[in-house]
Image (tube, rainbow, N blue to C red; front, side, top):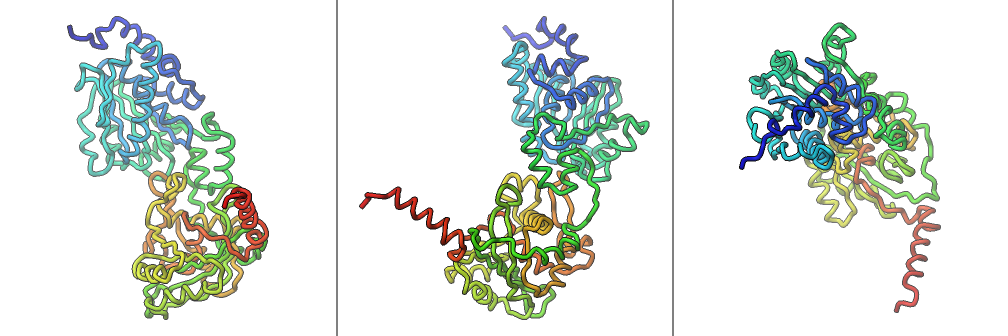
Length: 505
């Protein structure tokens, strides 16, 4: 005997009558969720026939969970409904929205309405449907980009809905196709995104196409500050550590102001020379020799070497990185690359336990190899690679953006002090001339050198050398001359070890 379909289940019609017009009750009673006021506003707006909803959201607002509720409400409460979910990054969509859909289905299966569970099929191909109606009653995903815009066409129906996630990154060609398919009375559309750019269709739904301006889009802003899912501790940390545009976009759900196109202002670039000593002699600091490698032999780029005291890690917490740049032994394009490794090593010869941080790009690979062959502790810099730490990877396009931003933050907050007057004019010009930009998901990026954003500036070889000192993964060995080492840290460790192994022959 064949299993009955959802339509044949005598409970389904009454279920639809109860919840078809009320997604908030569906979320609470069917899915078992507690909702925030921001989520309630979104769900109520979506429930309207022919709704058009645009949500600009910060982190941790429950936006993705809300979308999973909408997906299953539309699937279970509207007969033979069809939904298209699209985003510019399908991997991200799988890791976020589809994961939340699966979680919500499981919650339904554990609750009073568990009889719905056997009627929902979730496939591994970004697709789910009502069992028995594979091609008539379903939710599907497609990648949204300019090349696939035409492939978005063809979906219609009385109960048809479109969800566009991270809509700020989706090209206008895709929106032209999608909005053109919404021709019937009960068709709906939701766009959610971080507000990463001041142009494009998503921007227009938040401004000129919004209901408040006589348009058809209910434009909402979800703020992390108003979200019960963001802890006070996490919020305070982000408010302290984010720059102004990061706060606006990632926390408040607001558009970037683009108040400055550079990472560091001239004011703070000069301030680095006024901080004086910021690392005490009694602290467990280490020595790092940093070098940006150029081709040399008269070319425009120059090789640079810096000697610095370094302490701490990261850009936050109780012990963020502090740097004192003590010397700049070399800044020239007259040293051949074959001789540079020895010059770098010589810069640290008189230092206790130095770590060498050297650009590995281009000819730098050979320089790094020569330094390693002489038994030195080396951290090669390949800062086109992505960050390893998740938090940094969420904020920055690559190690270059991370290092440069952390150096700029340190300069602004008194954690980067330059104690040598050598090459000051060039250092200030380079530090205050690094342009910034953002990817579609508002990760900070540094435009390619030579691009229009650099406005004709050359390679910032001195500033690159400084930024290496703030790159994720750049460690240091506590100097034997550091007061806290000789007087405290090492002595305490030796004493603890002695106690631990007392009596052991």
